[in-house]
Image 1: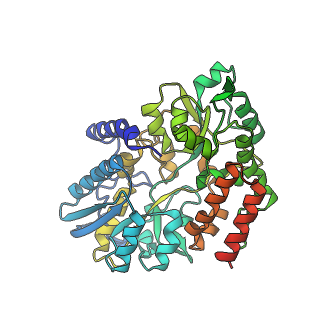
Image 2: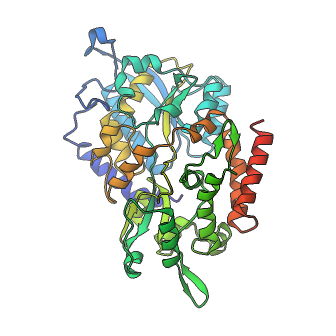
Image 3: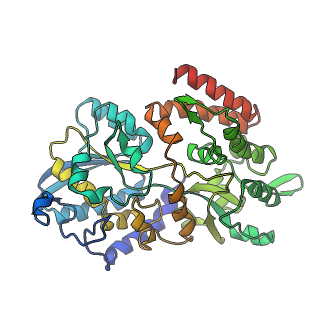
Length: 448
């Protein structure tokens, strides 16, 4: 996704927010779970027997993350604030915009794992198996606000064999972005939250415009990005991974996947090859008014705020027989071999405080991990209306995706899925053929 230029304005706005006091109504270090003031947030507290007594942090720690320039600036501000509250702590920020996991794996192999680092939820089992991650349960027991009130289902992705190794710092809601001007031009009402897959397919046809035999406006878009196809694959109750095996040929899975396949086949959404010939990504086509409905994550909000010169909004994804929001979550891990775990957990606590999340969330890139913060207008900002994004918190994926990730073969599984979906979306095979190929290859090579 194009993000750097699109998020520059959001970043500037964020710094205005920080300069103005990072939410002057919020006490520094407010507990993410309880909402009660904690003047020692970002610091390691003593056990509950002498609660309220701060333990001064000191020493050096390292923090490693990925992202683009806008995110680097935001997290630099978080680290500056943390070090101002803990002047005897020095944080080495290892910003890694490219080849993050290659570099992290090299560090793990060389026994130089960062003290605090990010892991995408799907990577947790792999790095736990490598011995990179410290068990966080003792710290959660000491600081229960770390996991109290988390959005249901998120913490599960940081757990392996009953132990907690990472804590979610955020998550992305998958929603349908809508060009309101194109709907008005076609004299069509914006769908409400109870719209169906059948209505979605029908609207895609009505909103596709052809002039002189050439499509000049697509009604919809279908992307083989994993979070998008998971949304459709699960919409009729199907499980694309079941009993330790790839299960794409399940009729319920195919019913959802064929919604994507059909809108491309009917030329109401561009195929991957069509996008290649156009020379623009689907996000750019939406931003230039050539796609009416575009599924994407919360991360697309700052881009729309900055680049869209038309009226736009976001609504919940259409419903089959159910709704599932795939989990895209950045999680915080502590290095197993960290030599300063007191400072490391202090930094994690500050990241997850209302003040810390207030800095990183307000630009609109993602959603806060705590339920109580979903109604905080300084954290879940508008436009668009926050309600559709908050609604997705009630149907987070907790089974199929988790079970696939728990195998530790998630990335390799995706490498099998993506080209087969590309072949289907480009018209060289049916979705049934793609599903059969995925199941055969995955269950022969990975899930034996």
